Length: 104
Image 1 (cartoon, one colour):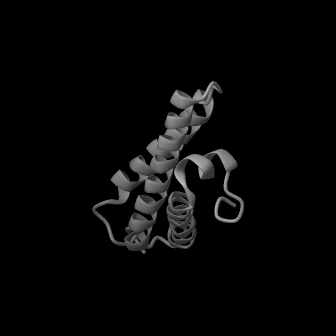
Image 2 (cartoon, rainbow, N blue to C red):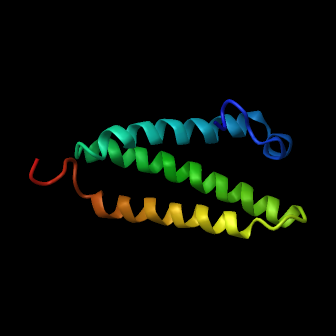
């Protein structure tokens, strides 16, 4: 959705190129993870996690910048994004040494 209709405040402050990078990372990482995680292909899931984690880190940076520069409170949104980012980091740490799910 970010690629089709980017948030106006983000587009005006960070530019269209930044949104395209952020959106493409999330889209490609999400699609790769969606197909590789259930099948146990951790060799594909690891780069997907990196792409999704990078997209979440970029989004967390955006939220932090908007929290500092605007009068609107965005701390709840930032906490949810950081929780998701921690989940991706933990998943990557669990599967890092493997190429395929053990037993498959």
